[in-house]
Length: 171
Image 1: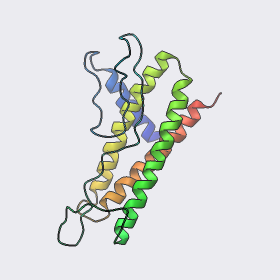
Image 2: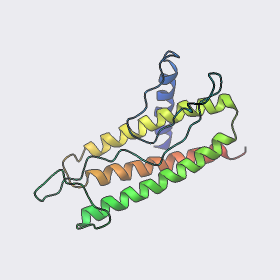
Image 3: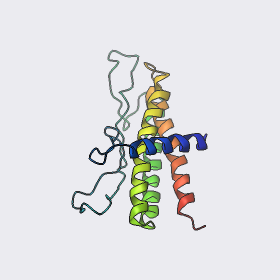
């Protein structure tokens, strides 16, 4: 499965490289994504930083009065809310680890390799978010939809962290 994910991310990166230089690759909306450093010169590669935030999945529907009610992780009232909050916290921890490993790898690369890594990570982020949106859409309208999405995000993020760690290790 990891090889398939890597292959899809690679294909997305190659597709992003086929765009004209004037058109930057589209980033997934409100997700962890590499961002260009506005102070960088035109010849230097962009500085990439993950932000350990992801657009929250649509609010968890509750069987009670309001199906669009959001959850309060500080005061969970149901098992579904407890599960969703645990999944969100686990994803946030995995995303923080990915950010750490990414920054370590990036620091060891040449400027051209950093630019390549930026393209690949942008494509990977888009793949991850779309894949998890699809996976959670299989349970649309169910209370567990947000939990499914966060578990997917966590698993793919952990896999990507392991891939970047392997790339950072000396041969």
